Length: 282
Image (cartoon, rainbow, N blue to C red; front, side, top):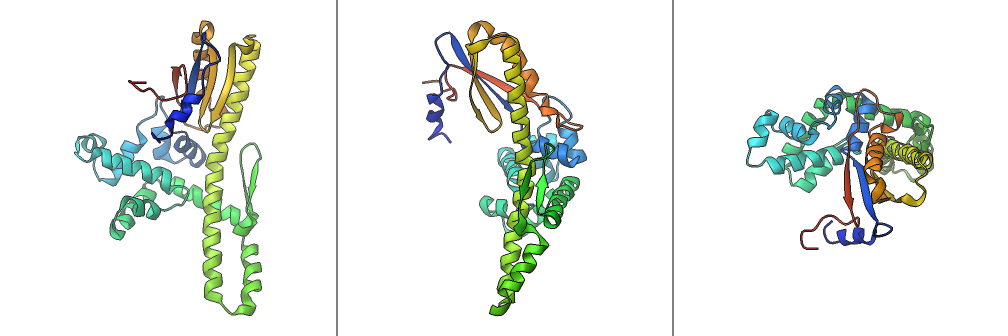
């Protein structure tokens, strides 16, 4: 947030003849969800570079109007913010009830929007439910590079073990609530891992490709990776090779790590002396 953004100013280019270059992906998590689930509406949004405004399209859907109509509404910013919160807050829980509580929606409104949202993106919803179902059977979920996240407590076997352990205490109601809540959280974590883990895979593959490019061009310390922050890579770059590096970095960022199916990733670049967001005074 704005109170702590000054910390980003601690990251500086290596010297006066260098600048920082930041590259991040646009709505990466939703693009990866589209690629994994093959949801047709999501694929449509991420079939172009730059991608369509997914949050505005979602706001229009929730408000029962067209994209052009929702943009003209006085409450457009509020609707788009709520749509963005629904997308980023809803997929790991497969529910908008947590979002509704934060947004101050009534229970009736939350139920209505929850049904509308997940029925609209039903293919993605069914994919997420499939991840949870498989996790319940096998006790893990797996990425394309064969990394696994194990969650034995999400399995039917674990549930039966705990029913046996709790049987002497004769509290079946409590036992079932405990199992249900723990396994719901496990399901959320498995879906989270499939998306966030894939994002990490793309980041690592991109980093390695850029490192190979730097070595091939014999740039040495002319380019240095300063930090990789989730979906954003920051490099210190000598000014004389800046233009060539920008083209190279962008081309690697949009490759998608070789995991994107039927949709594309896009990236934005920024340049500065430090990693701090632009301030007209400072």
